[in-house]
Amino acid sequence: MTMRLSIFTIGGALLLATCLTAPAGETDKKSTSRVAKTTSAKWLDQLGGKGLVLDKVINKGGFTVTHADSALGRITKFTFQQPGWWVSLTFHGELTAKTPLKTLKKKFWHVALDRLPTPGLKLLGWEVRPQTPTSSFKKGVEILTYGNGKIKLRVRTKFFALYGRNPSVLVPADAPAPPSSSFQIRKEFPLDLTLEAPFAFK
Image (cartoon, rainbow, N blue to C red; front, side, top):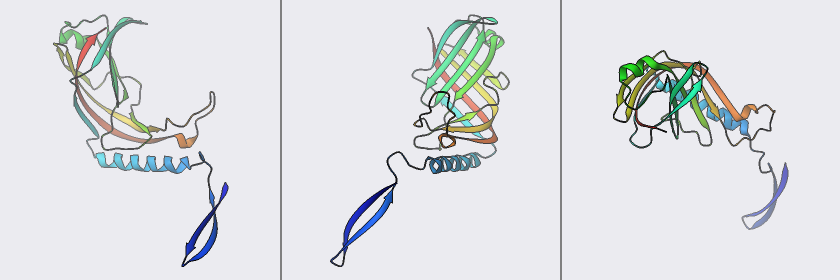
């Protein structure tokens, strides 16, 4: 704490006052975390029974498609990254832009929803994302269309929690993150995601 002297007048009289102020950097991050968590909890309550419903059509950008090796042989991976989005689709084998939809469905392995937008939830300085019980999964995923440079999918699943992180809090290597730097609200809520986007093979 530091002491600050303030000089002001009331009715022409000169007064001297002192007040205590916190040095720069000593702001109460815990209260910020509490506010972020409370706001997020209210947002979850307002979703209702339908949960998080996202219907997105992408016209610019879209999925980048790559081939790679895995423990189960060659795979094809579709990755979509934009602000607020990080969705990955993985298929067995080396697919092409002309692979039939029927084959694409048969070769589907799993989806990973690393980041999805949370419309209506505004937390300045915080990164918030819904969390699935497992990092990747297959159940509830349907490839609706594929061809002419576009892919459309629908994902119906459930999240188990909402996680928030304050990226401005720097944590030294091998040190635990302070509780004020993140929060997690464990509450199950549904997801109904429809995503249509272009794709391009690298």
